[in-house]
Length: 506
Image (cartoon, rainbow, N blue to C red; front, side):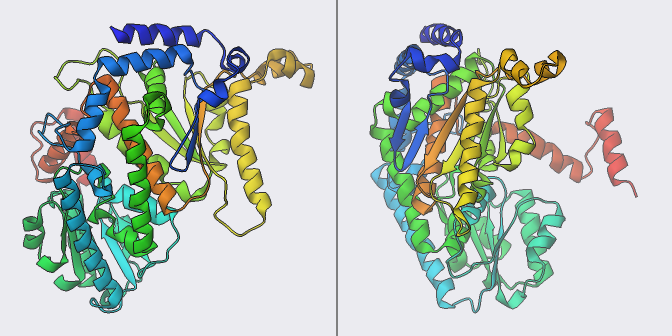
């Protein structure tokens, strides 16, 4: 079994402190700094030595990684529990001829609707309220926050949470005569989305002609009262967390502009081609996923932290949390057999430098193994004094360097002779980190970055032989919530019944 070989290679690598490996492997930095599609990924401060990489490549061969990658990118079934393909790459031009053709036709309809809005067919539009949840929310929100507003509707608000506080904030001050609502739901039956859409429509008195739907179930959207000309469809084989590239991204296009949305798709398509064609040892998504496997599935790291040293990517950790944990938070393989090792770690993070004053104490001196990932961008996203950016980048580099090097007791004692205080200043070091560098943050590089994480997520699942495209774990809580909301509480445990009474009585 190749897993045994990989486990042995990881154990061997773990015996050598990371801060010493550069002297043992003179070519390490060059070998583990990978570049493609405008991204540079530095994996040299991770456990990926030559032995681990060789064993990982052997495991990939054993689990038919290449065949599963080909299935993904050709529109074959990769979601066996639901008997579906996963065709999000076809939205970027990489897929079967039929899937790419269908995606182009859907994009043509999306562009026509975009142009109608820009041309004033809906009258003056001062605000768009995008209603969706999960993948229908996180992708568009990330893009809208990351890219400058230059489209026909710069004021785009997103409602996801069923807590009406967020809804009230999204529609506060909206002029009903100048507001469009985009309702995004693959099934058009999602409870939170339906309820929020009804509330926005009723609160603003929006007529049917000012409501747009994006869905894989147009009949349900029509039942909701959306005119057929205002309904954008997308393929049932595009999962919600991979749906940004479809009409789900209409609000992002209205904010950033159609050219930017096109560039977003082209950047993602470029990463699709890199993932399809690059040798695995030089393949950015695969190599990053191999590191994730080493830490999460072999060394037992229960979480992975992501910190973007750029305010424009502040929503990236939230986006990745859904992408990775909903895709790979599984307990059985594709054949229904219980996994022998851990699957997805908890993905969390924040933005630098804020996070340094919040969670980095634990990362530097805590007792948990937490691989850390940094994202940094060479060109600043502002016109202020360049020293802001220099200080930002200095902090980013310093965190990775400090995690690696640590500080010994002897070094601490040179700062203070008090032994107790010196021991409190000891940092073990040898803590792994990786860094993703972008030359600039524009639509093309953002598209490549998001696709990189999509394929990294797929690669992790393929190595574990799990289905990364179903989400059965989401459904149970939804079903119980529907039952409770309708008054069916007889089957609840005593604690849950008591909590329901406490929170709803009176």
